[in-house]
Amino acid sequence: MRRGLDHVVHLVRDIDAAGESYDLLGFTVGARNAHPWGTENRIVQLPGFFIELLQITDPSKISAAAPGHVSFGAFNAHFLATCGEGFSMLAFEGTDAAAEKGILDQAGFGGFETVDFSRKAHRPDGLDVEVSFSLAFANDPASPDFSAFICTQHHPENFWSADFQRHANMVSGLKGVVLVADTPVEHQRFLNTLCDVPVLRARDDWYVAQTPRGEIDVMSRPLFTERYGVAAPKGPGLRVAAVRFASSGAEELRRALAARRMVEETIAGMVVVPPRAVAGATLVFEQTESKSA
Image (cartoon, rainbow, N blue to C red; front, side, top):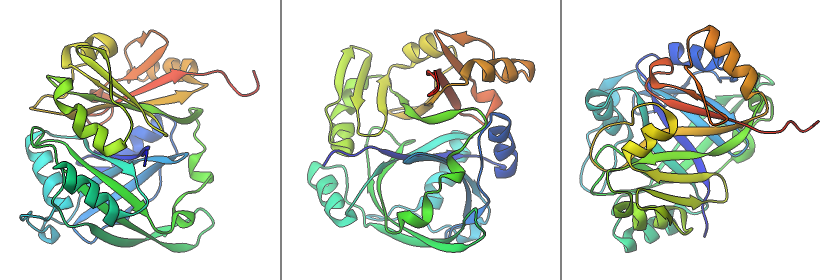
């Protein structure tokens, strides 16, 4: 089953400061939510996709990783210590965690127990509701600083909110994510298994997959820097380097961010916000025509 992008985890040291940065970029940022494993998040929603701002708040609750078991908290604690702030995890939309675990296991990229959890969420209308998820984790042995999973939401009607998807920066949706690797072709089968769509060669240092929700670009680190004007995340294997957004207000955003020194240049019709401005993450806004045009 073809799987679109579901969300990306943006790991930060100070979740409220990161929320303020996203607010300055014109995003609507949700309230804090607690996880049972010592982390808290804040959500930036788009239609069908979200950015999960994540902070480790109680290390004493983090369980150690073990064979066959992924520790969400331990992976992110290690990532923060070794890589610093930035995009640490990538999630794909799922419908049946047990079946998706079987697919990952058969392909040689799984071997982990599914993770099931729930938490309370505060809706814009003031109601507290329950949201719950099942996660089927994948492992690319060549990518120790990259974690991916397939995420099934059990009460999506409680999670998604049109009010949270209205943003002052006129972002209307996800364009895609950009991954970097020293040799993109080495990760082709892994990504193809995750999204179940062809990961095709654009050129030797650039592969592309068109998922049902968002594009995945996998490019070499030099090509990423050439294209976006910022340094790519370091490390072996895959890393999530950038998230791309569609916005009819990209040009206005560029002027506002330039005044705050949060952006340097517009590159080929894109507004690129560098990692120094947003807690280690690169955010790319691409101009689209407004619906009224």
